[in-house]
Image 1: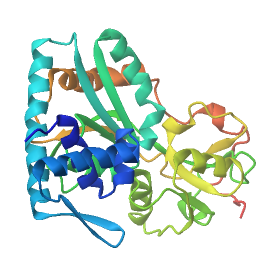
Image 2: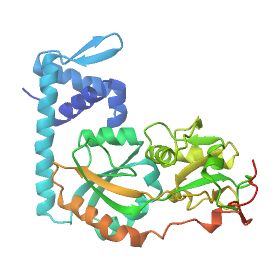
Image 3: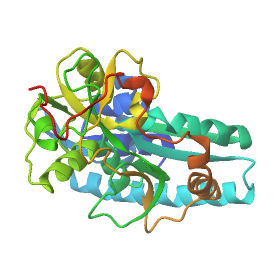
Image 4: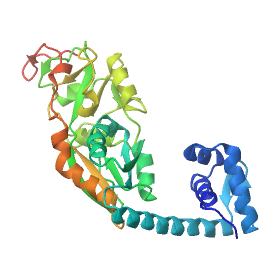
Length: 321
């Protein structure tokens, strides 16, 4: 058979995503190009690889076998690339890094010095929500993953490398801004804006309140950190978010509330599959995160620039309702 590596890559992407359109988007190709590559592969195999039921496509029996073969082939090629990169040391090579959306506020600042130190390294940096990052992890699509909550039910190696405190925030003109020792029950009565289900920040927040006997009720679910920040600044409600997200926020947009038990202590984790041998490049970045991340990023705490100036103790007085 005359089959190209590109045809196999296109086929694997269509099979994995179950869609020619989504495969074209991921591969940055036109849909006709994707269809043509699969058509040529079908002609080479001389058997249909997909069958259609309604609007969905499914692999045929020979398609399933080819999909398994693709995985074995790509794994072997990845091992060869890793060996080739190792033989070149850190002069050349590739780092495939994936992180959850909240990490985009600081990971580029860590990548910059690393890439300056090793200019021959090519970095592919993927950003997605937690659900999609875990999907990528299950398929071993990347070398390293950065998450705010360690994944469960995965055979992975997990190491914390950076503090990730969660703070309670409100609009800068909110009645609770500037007050001290705000009871958790009082904060829980506010209109709460949260990320989608499965978000690491949401899971940590719900657990924090549940452990203290308080069930939070989300009033609005928003699909991105930036949108939540803008919604809080616009007066739609309060939220809990990573302190990293507030570094460059204007002082008059949101305030960090002094709620009892906050900030919630968390960490950022670097993760890789337990059965995956890391390339010399991935090992170098792994060590770099472990030894230098805390020194490269300023200490994180309640940032005075985003807290209003009025300070009143709520522990023994009347709290605005």
